[in-house]
Length: 318
Image 1 (cartoon, rainbow, N blue to C red):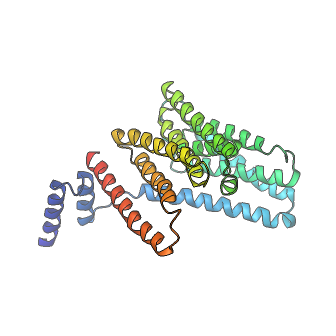
Image 2 (image 1 turned 180 degrees about the vertical axis):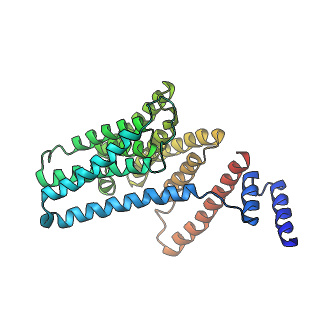
Image 3 (image 1 turned 30 degrees about the horizontal axis):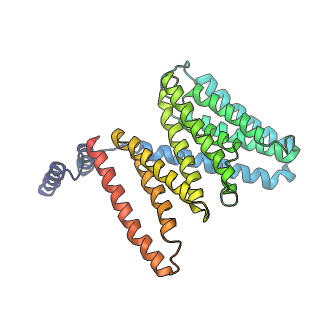
């Protein structure tokens, strides 16, 4: 008991000194009392990751054993999974609303996510076997993006919305595999155009009151695409000055948006992307591996400490 009281006393002192927030103090006090606590967020992430791993394994199985299994069996299994997922979602979904609506069950969102990923696997398999649109494969991405947007708004799911935005990005030509080898000016312009369209569309839909809580998803994806496009220009050893200035302007805008609203992600975007861009300029003329390593160790540690302090500050104000 004396030790328990010492823990509570120290927690109270840390809270008064501003070292921990009231929420953190309550959580730690509960842990010291051996009270149960929620791990919903951790389980949620693990379940989504598990579905992603399952579908990745499914795609590997289909691509590896399709010759032995045959097209009919593969398409039958995939179509059955797809039909079961969508039947479950449409039969269990509550009435549609402009505002945010809670999930009707614990597994609903995971079944929807599984159905969307299964659709992608089946579509990829069909194209690989039949080559119906071999020269216009981007139409698959456009159609898939449209489907995911519909499902996201019908079932109020941000994960599916992010899939739709990613499919639209693919239609714009922003496939991850092309980033290292196609960092040209035209490619960056498509990336910037996409980020502007995504951000403006999210803002318009928010003002219209159509799922306004989706705006954060639009803005986060648009910001990341924009920062990657600007960074690719900074990494270019020719004509990088304009891109560096644009990156600094984008970082400033991200800070101006994130700080007053206490949205830590946008502060982190500004810090991390700005750090990477500026560092790439500073180390270009350094040919010593030791000097480069020392630079990243010292500045990386300082950046980490700064982000931790900002996160703690936001936590105290929340």
